[in-house]
Amino acid sequence: MANILAVGIATIDIINRVSRYPKEDDEVRAVSQTIRRGGNATNTLVVLSQLGHQCAWSGVIIDESDAAIVKNELAEHQIDFNHCKVISQGKLPTSYINVSESTGSRTIVHYRDCPELDFAFFSQLDLNTFHWVHFEGRNVAELKQMLSWLKTHYPHLPCSLEIEKPREGIEQLFSLADVLLFSKPYAISQGFSSAQHFLQSLTKENIMTCSWGEAGAWLKANDKIIHCPAFPPPEVVDTLAAGDTFNAGIISGLAKQLSHQETLEYACRLAGHKCGQDGLTNLT
Ligand code: ADP
Image (tube, rainbow, N blue to C red; front, side, top):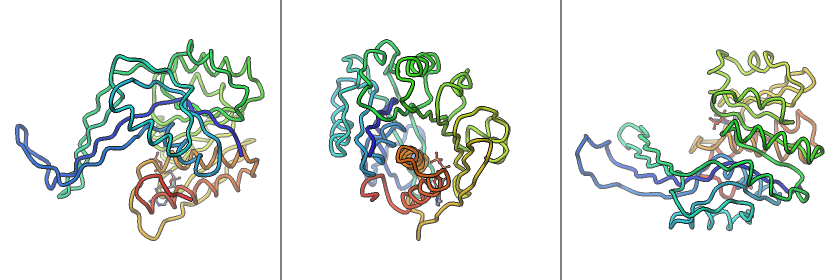
């Protein structure tokens, strides 16, 4: 099993279920409220830890009361957060989500007053004990320095990069990571309507995946593209973080040196299984 560091964010999701979405200036009572940790990098770690890997997170923690929600959940999954930058000012990125039971709509107000992890902090970390580093594709300027640093100072340490959303200049990072994990929305934003055509258009040498919801996922390596269909659960319960789970499956398979076909199938099975249950706990 591998020792894996993920760089990215943790968020707080406050989910209020309401029987109907309120009108402006209305006052309604929520049917239920759930408060939980979110964030792609930490989601992927929660899955990787359940697969038996030793996991650590590097990101920014704001020293405020809600930080306990993040820390408690990571601790429950034995995820080390000693590689985080802790600051006293600000607010952890928070999503206030109103789910309407009458329409199923999700209206989200997002608030953040939290800087991204900076290269100056990252470059001080001792990465010698890690076998894999995973990055969430967010702050391009800082990430470019982190990925270049890794290539120079830890040339044998494999790294993966998640590209979920188009961000200005993010293409500059593609040649700096060993594994690129693309989402369907990113491929669509680039003008493609299929994962296969999108991956074909990229001429880089890296291993690349592109997940496509119920159509499964594609992987490109050595100029060869392979596909694996999705594994639908008996009942689709919750698809939130299916992509983060898929990415964990890919990282785990590659870190364990499974073949590309085995890795892709494993990731699709795991993500399909996740869709059949609420949340990310008790996946295995
Ligand atoms: P995201 O969560 O980022 O939107 P996707 O929707 O592409 O990511 O899902 C990631 C993977 O999860 C897919 O490649 C597929 O294997 C699996 N998956 C997603 N939705 C379903 C579904 N309804 N049934 C079975 N598997 C699914």
